[in-house]
Length: 464
Image (cartoon, helix red, strand yellow):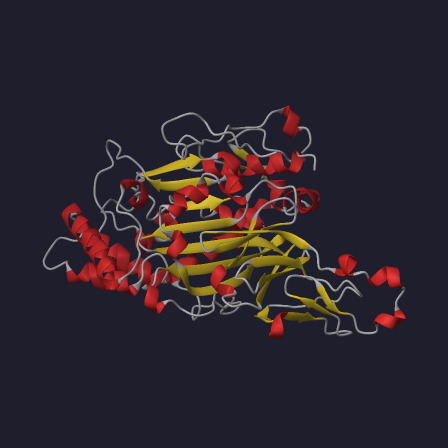
């Protein structure tokens, strides 16, 4: 199954590198498999055969981010998570723990809840015949019991079935496979990297979604690298150079990890990579464009120390960042540690296999969850969160999805996500062009895309 061996080295996180392309033992079992790390067969993004294999071998056996903790703050609160036609109720228990219950009445198969809400009295009531369960899944009342054969209504047979459910980083994760490895083992080393970035302290600022005509893998891959910024988001590229320059001045390092996870972050400077971006200008454009990784409060801090300084001068950047840490301490905000490991990830992202991304920056994070929509390999649900760290005395109440908005809706999406969304459906149309049999990946810039697909093939070839 997944590669979980941790390589030797002084830092178990940085040495947990992926093993590269699979051998014939995997490839022989997977249609349209990844024969190398440089090409992705086009059919992986639209083939019904490949999609059905994902439904059978991936989604029922992998840990998935099902909810944010603050979606269900109080006992009896629930939220629904759906994947490939399987619905689960994520329910806060009386003791504060969380259970994931299969969302189906044991009598006549009625779904017991939808969306989000609260089960009054900690009782789940079937809307069809009024059967009831406690929020722990045990049966509490069978209306019309006398009409049933005694052996069919034994309590142990009528309890709602549970899925595996664990928490990490302010998220609730589920797995439909009771024999799956523990969550933190499956999330290694991605969760370890994000923990030191302070994601445990972050809470939902806003949460929205779009339904997009694009395969779930193709959609999320757009965010596995940062070198699309110059073309897709030209307003964010504040380096001074010629408009047709082929130099990628953003010094970014890409790391494929075990378990299919990946990272991009600031890398070491390269000879010939001159110039510095305008830090304040870029921060303002980021905040205005998406209100996520950089927030208005961060801009206020950066402006307060600008004075007459050149905001593209590294001395200004250092002063602005120092002021941000001082602001957090004074405001009672539990920000991340001031270490190179943390700050190198600002502006980059971590992909947690199979379908969740976090882009931490300062005491904030932009997050994406992408999953199949309506049993169609060419459509996805694309959810976006803006997380931030609040003072302990000012944390928000229950997190609720704001709504499902069209990808071009300028009233609900900032310029940056609209620019990104604009590429996704174009890619899905292009991937089916008869002249294209495979996409071509950059060995330097797109190695984490290949790594995700190679892990996927290992999952699809596994015997469960």
